[in-house]
Length: 264
Figure: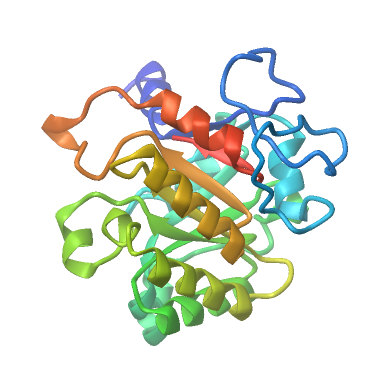
């Protein structure tokens, strides 16, 4: 594989975060926060979900400039891969998806699947890392989040976007997303389990209707999510059924949501 092919492959794995303060594409997707957050474009949405008077350190990093974010890749997003993508311009990296129960219970699983390098990565070094976990049990999810927080991860992400059959069987990813009460219980448990310096985020897909998506987004932020990544397709739009992303729906989420939004 030549260098050009590697770059093309790499770019297909990235999420783009667009900042209204610095991006000239003013009619594109924009991150919006409430008017009391100084210097950030004011949302036209009547909904005000962010209770803090100023962005958290993780939010501030996301808002500091346009970000290129390396998406979570199962079995691939290890330290070597993250380091490689940073060489090509990635400014925020996810780990691979980690099954919460296995991560919480098995030291062997943790050693084999999680390799955050505290001395080489992290927000303090300008190389923030989001650790993604999957599961539907608040206990295991919070245990995993606590361990990841202690390891030094800058954020712990709830996988609410995986559309694969294995996610359906395990009741996680996009199949957990419509179970709003359970999802919020998980987020609150994770929020209580991590240290103050660790953000809780979520990666979601669109639901069957924009109204359902907005309801879920509002509930997630009220429960403590500090940032969202939104895949512009539903759980049913995969493989041969996959069409263009619904950018209008993603834009609507961005305009209504008071926390940073990453468009996938």
